[in-house]
Image (cartoon, rainbow, N blue to C red):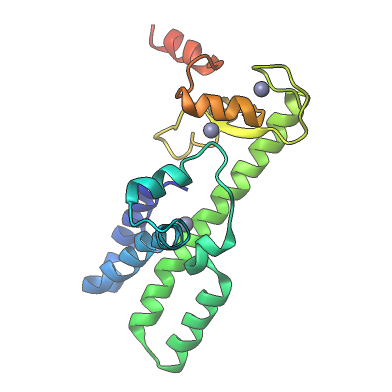
Length: 192
Ligand SMILES: [Zn+2]
Ligand SMILES: [Zn+2]
Ligand SMILES: [Zn+2]
């Protein structure tokens, strides 16, 4: 899930938790937003660059490699260790940090399962054939045509298309020029 989205949803959760947590509310909020720093750190170490832009480019590729090492802070062992320490030391701070991390990881899990479901159903619908070049491919990749602002519309299948790896790379290189965008026509008629 994108970082802006995490910021938005974590802030909403923080507003709800405000009456209970009061001035401590920023702790889980910060944890929930900062957890993704593990991606950056992993990139900095493995690619030997501190450039944030390079990291963003790396994770913004058409089909970025999914490496568990890049998600260290998301790992159940790390979360479990924090829980253990928090309970052991009776540390409210640790438990507040943990609640922020867990909130973030739950959102990531929901996002991943939604995207996986979309990829499966759209691939089946397309008969495992890339709609752009017509190549038969059992491992089509999910590409986002339109990032819906409304979270309830986010995972609507009309905002996505499945493409073969080559066409997916091209789509990202050309920022989606030449791709079918059926929902655009639909939106235009709605406005008009
Ligand atoms: Zn994350
Ligand atoms: Zn293709
Ligand atoms: Zn894509």
